[in-house]
Length: 247
Image 1 (cartoon, rainbow, N blue to C red):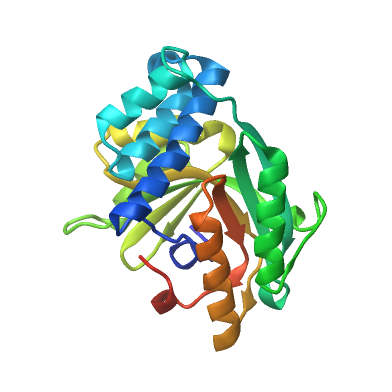
Image 2: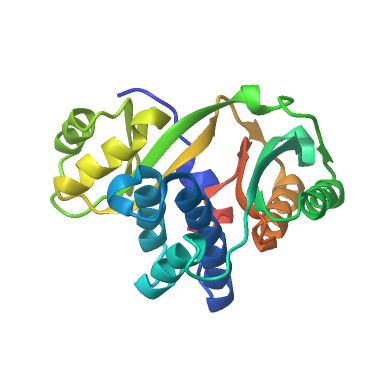
């Protein structure tokens, strides 16, 4: 199917060090807390929780950590209520940036996010200033393996309920409507596909090209956002070279 995808170049894989993995587990723990609060602690009746658990496993989060996060969120252990807040703004070279956060102190988080925008040479904007440049989509990545047939995988994705399908050099990218994301993910797992990642994301409608200095500034900004525990996801429309991105 048609579609120009830069997912492989903008999806920054983290977790190469113990410290980075710890950051990811902290962030996923917060997502579990929110999912449990919204739909209860039983994954069989909480599709959002099933999605987060699948994300946790794809990031090699131990089962004990997952169980502990669910118990904590369900009130069996001390719990903290997190608020979901999204910020929009502009990064280096005027790139569009969306920052999704889960926080127990919105004043602290707003100050931290604004500070990162400022020291990156950008600025935090108002709600809606850049979100119109993005589409909300479920994104499922299937890693290519020897013997996999492109057409066969595409038909399986479409049969599972996918909207679009893109063949990349080392992976297949399956795009869904956010409302059908859980169903498509589970259908693909049922027929035996190993999913490298699966989550609802913001996909930019166009990309901006950066020079070498601009690329360095963007990567530095993304690192600063990654290091902040309150920041869950960062979406942007910078066309980063693949060699500059940690895969």
